[in-house]
Length: 355
Image (tube, rainbow, N blue to C red):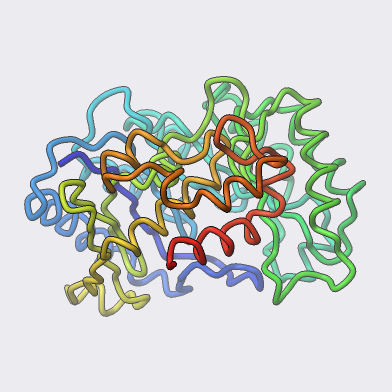
């Protein structure tokens, strides 16, 4: 089997209000965590007969909190081939030249920097750690990863406007990142008066003006710079998950079923070697997830993979939904305007699938 690899690094210096990812402030667990991750990777590669790893993504949490020696140990425990996409997430406050150099030397060719916003009032409102001179950190990243770094930004933050978000984008774009992710706050924490559809459309137009094309609901890239690890998620291709709270999905195309392996969000349980929960994915569940993930992507569902996996075409499964949504579709995928109404589209598609 061919499967990508996601490694969750759960350590953070601070817990931000908006973050739904599992993290811990106890850095004393770093050493036993690194030991457990190395064993976990080898065990999963053997258990599932993984022949190759096409992409690696090390996320968090805050992977850069591991420092240069910690990230080097982690990277050396992964048997990846040269020239595959290897991404590491980093936060500005824990970025250093030594960390970036350790990443670059050990095979990382894509760095994702969690900027979120340059507006200090917004950062304070969601209890995000101050990052010092973020512009100096971006300049440092640019020297080591000049054409292969990504920046994460957020929309819907308190005290944020379309104008301030576009100002953030203009400043960030002056460092020429290859990729920009723009994530919206959840409905539970976003300001009541924020109109996300209008805001994201305006921001998307600004990114287009800056030579970034939207290729997924929250992701924009320059030509040839899409995150291929995430593309594999959106195509519902197999991946392994390593680390506390991480999940992996393995798929048997011959039966159109799969299994999701999810670790408990508990660093101590992970270090003890507690096994992940195994959740079977039946035919309908896997079909729903393939539709859900595929229509997030600007190219839509991989129709050849869908037909091969489910022995049906997409048109046979949701004909009425596809017909109703023609004004918001092009070449079988949702347009940028259609993506702004993705949840409504998926609701209609799921109802039709269940029927």
